[in-house]
Length: 263
Image (tube, rainbow, N blue to C red):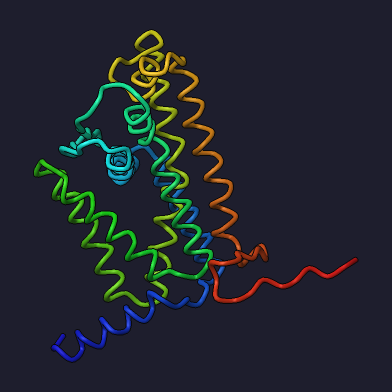
């Protein structure tokens, strides 16, 4: 690609960031939903794909740490798809509680945000928001595996947005949104299974840290995480299926919603 083509492609993407794209065909939306569900439900694939969920999980901890005035020190991502976010500040209080509770809701809520953008036909914007979020995580990652994982995922999203056809971009974007929505519940289920095997608690789990901070049982925090994941999936699925279902999304789409007619 020569300089002129590079500039033209950049200008095209910049224009697409502020405009809407054509809605993908219904079969693509359905196919990406089925594929994402398979990624979550088929354990051998889930063991690899779960790294994406871990990035979003640790990113949630990091974001709330910053928003509550804590000092964000590092993010570490491990090859077993576990992760750790370290921040400095008071080991108690609202800031610590919000930071601790942000991890499990982050993947489904990011998926819900992506679904809102895709339901409004802003496919390119969704891809570049993804790149921006990954870059924000990347600058705080402090281990080689984590750096490689986040960089590789960001490079893949960039390549799709830069070189992919409209159909490829839409398929990749919808697959990512569906995956985060479907994947929101499985880590919560795995969390409770781990807690059950350890006699009702896992000292280092987010739910049990919150139990110590708030004196609310860890099981209730697990239920909160699960409710957020299920709620995000229900609303997000409706947004992703907006064109097929006739749902209108005011303020997000360039087109106005029709005014309801009196019976």
